Image (cartoon, rainbow, N blue to C red; front, side, top):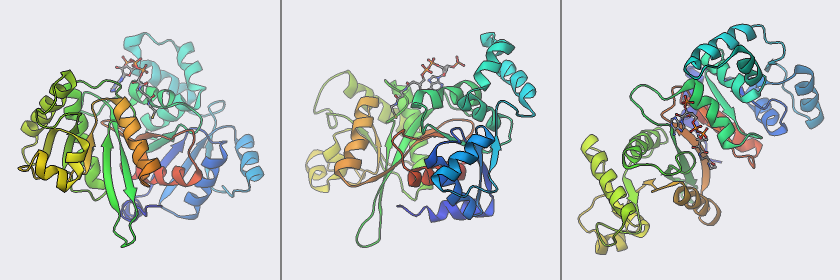
Amino acid sequence: MYGFGSLIETLKKNPKKIVFTEGNDPRILEATSRLLASNFLTPILVGNEKEVMEAASESGFNIRGAQIVDPENYERFDEMVDLLCEVRKSKGLTKEEATKMLKQGNYFGTMLVKMGVADALLGGATYSTADTVRPALQIIKTKPGNKIVSSCFILVRPSATGENEVLAMADCAINIKPSEDDLVEIAIESAECAKIFGIDPKVAFLSYSTLGSGKGEDVDKMRNAAKKTQDAKPDLPILGEVQFDAAVSPRVARTKCPDSEVAGHANTFIFPDINAGNIGYKIAQRLGNFEAYGPILLGLNAPINDLSRGCNAGEVYSMAIITAALS
Ligand SMILES: CC(C)(COP(=O)(O)OP(=O)(O)OC[C@H]1O[C@@H](n2cnc3c(N)ncnc32)[C@H](O)[C@@H]1OP(=O)(O)O)[C@@H](O)C(=O)NCCC(=O)NCCS
């Protein structure tokens, strides 16, 4: 597993609290026991205390010291209902509807972040991406200046020389058909996120065409998005539209776009839509031996992330560190 040493150092200087929305899940409990053994991240587990403790003892994990909060008897529940109604007043949310929503771990956990009880949230061990992300979109919303929430994956391939190959790919998980302007925001946010993981971003807007070699609406979309991003961030190395081979292979780059500093060396990849992005990162993961961390949500007003339902405890532990370190 990638070490995330610098993220842990950041957290040690400023320890955080992270809420897990599925407190009974054995993978969450294993990650919680590991986090409790270190002292940089305090887990808060959503669930019934007796059930969570029983699940921990059945799966053999020591979670002594973990904070467990139960929507059924949370002392600030009424305050939470009122705040949710206030946040969703434009939708006419009633107290009864808010109460029902807050009995679910995903909404309850998101409100713990909104109320400042937790700094960050990690969910999705059993909830779908949509059910983890929707409460965040509705309650936490985009940060000032951003129009959309998007996501990126960080891909890490350990090398024999000890120098990891680290890449960013976006948006592989949230925006199904991003517009040109969405892609600009996705690229800028992904480049910022890439820097946190030690990448000096070189951004490629991927397509089936390289600098006009092919024609089509999506080619225009990627070319225009690259141009708009370059206008917004003149110092960021950007290339688009470009095919994946020209983006990563110096040999192909010499033929297809010899004048670009990004071609052949791209490390931050922007895909035209979620089909390409989701398939693309999984190919890197399953056939390219990259470890995939994410989706890391970008543009949200607080750090909230989604786990894959197929995740293991090690991935929960890594994503907890990533999520909290971004807060
Ligand atoms: C993210 C996603 C769940 C949102 O879908 P949804 O909940 O049906 O979205 P809705 O259109 O009902 O919008 C719900 C709220 O979120 C907001 N929203 C939706 N997408 C958003 C985005 N990308 N950025 C910011 N806000 C967004 C809407 O404005 C709306 O806000 P409001 O209720 O305050 O008006 C949806 O885009 C999706 O399913 N994406 C793909 C997820 C997936 O399957 N990924 C692959 C596996 S990793």
